[in-house]
Amino acid sequence: MTWGAVLWVFTAGLVTALATGLGAIPFAFLQELSPRTLAISNAIASGLMLGASVGLVSEGAAYGTAPTVVGGALGVGFIVLGGRLLEGREVHFGKVHGAGAKKILLILAVMTLHSFSEGVAVGVSFGGGQALAALITLAIAVHNIPEGLAISAVLRPRGSSLTACAGWSIFSSLPQPLMAVPAFVFVEAFQPVLPYGLGFAAGAMVFMVFFELLPEAYENGGATTVGLWVSLPLAAMILFQRLL
Image (tube, rainbow, N blue to C red; front, side, top):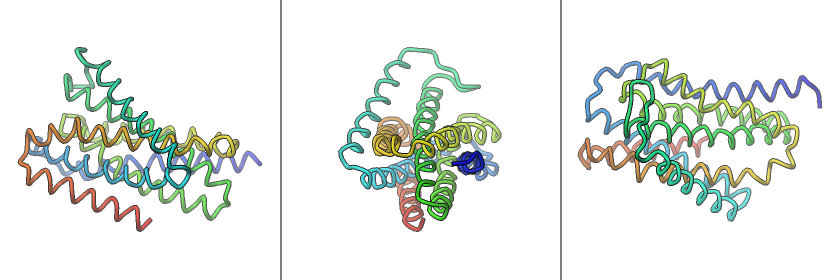
């Protein structure tokens, strides 16, 4: 193992992290920040997160079904505990405060923790050769773009700038280059924990969707509108992952 190989692994993880910021681009064309826009944005984020969760569970099950289920339960517990810790507290996130700020903090926390698993996946993949590593790195990088879109869909309608959307999206993926290197160096130690991390992210995302994002979406938008904007990104995300 050489320093050149370690640098290559870190660079691959950094590329996947930077790709997340591309998800903010569609919101450069979003001018109207009405309650209907907020509802549609929440619905889009919900569909993307549910689609990502399907892929995470499928990938985790390949490493171990039971650990994936345990990880999912821990992810749900994390969101419940986080919500209770924030309950009754005055939370601010830039210009956003109150319930909106809490949703932003929880989603960023989920996405950031989720990135640890993706970083491990990048590092572990390098143990299988350059061809496999390149394929996994490309897949995760492209997969990160709609994840950045999901984050921006929550941030942008609540007043965050386009730069902040891209910046926080990239921030949420910084664990990927940080975890890729140790996972590459100690591949045998990291591989058993991967299904727990993937399950954790899936459980946390699904819980956030059904108990945080969708209730607010239905409050500000009609059932047909919300259903449509959840279903289309969900189907597209699942198809997207299948093609990768």
